[in-house]
Image (cartoon, rainbow, N blue to C red; front, side):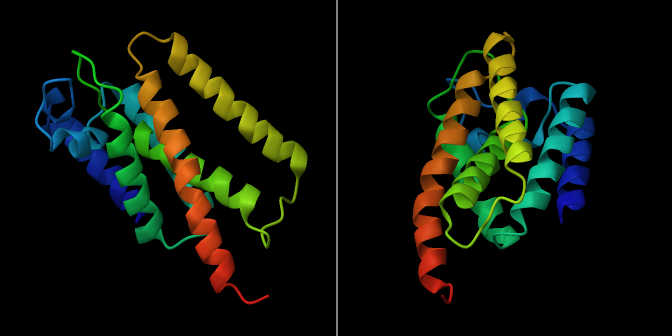
Amino acid sequence: MKYLIILILILTYIFFGNELGYTNVSPLYTHFTYIFRHASVLHLLINSLAFIGIYTSMEKHLNKWVFLGISLGCSALASFGAMYDKPTVGISGIVYAMTGLYLGITLLHKHIKIADTRKYLLYICCIVISLSVSFVKEDSNFLLHLYSLVIGIAVSVPLVRLKSHNDPD
């Protein structure tokens, strides 16, 4: 599934323009379509690698349809708080939402143990570095990234409660 999504991203990059991106005056549907278009090949490559990495981690904890749907909803919701004149494009909103879900699930779920604390802390440092780069890079939508991450973490709380309630002790 994750590679099918990457194929869709590649095809969208080839055949569509920034009209799929959202702005402060774009139609409502662009808050869902912006994830499919990327600004450059490098943007597409970096986001694809990040997507594959977090997708692989998430599929160990949640059904892929559940975390993809939740992540799409989180990134669409976050997009309304981060609108500008210039179009925002890229799947990074979903990547940050999935990262928020992953952080919340791994930190809050009582049955999930972090095997290597140093690697986990390095992972968190990488997230902070990525957000910092997004903050200083002019053409990056830092607020979308931050809001997607925070909403993902917030949504993980009821998910963990539901999952913990349904898990046998």
